[in-house]
Length: 137
Image: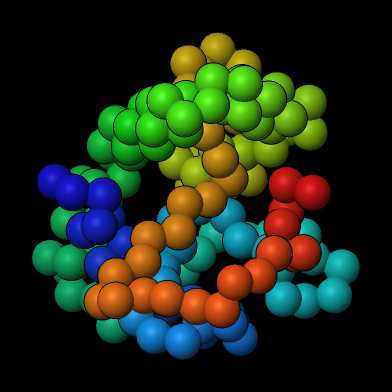
C-alpha cells in the first residue's frame, strides 16, 4: 500500500486559497475553522460504501508504518529537525497524525512525526507562501 492511497476517501482540502492546481488531502489533525476551536480531524467523504469504510479502517491500522516512514524521511534530511519536532509535540501534548482522537502522543512511541500529513496528487501546485494557522505554533 502506498501513502498516496491512504487519504483516497478523505475530503479534499478546499480552504487553500493559494491552490493553483491538483488535489490536496489531509490525514490527522487540522486547524479548526470555528472561533475558539483549535483543531479537529480531517474528515472522510460522505456516502462511503461499507467496503470503502472497511478498506479505510484496515489502512488506519497500518498507520504506524507511515509514521515510521515519514519520520525516517525527515530524519534523513535533518535529524535535528525531527528530534526538535518530537520534543515540541511532547512538551505541548500534541497528538500524532496516526491517532483518531486528540490524546497527547504516547511518550513511549518511538516515532512522533507530526500532527498531520498532507498528501498531494494530480499535478498539485500552489503559490509560494508560509502557513500562519499551524496548530503546532
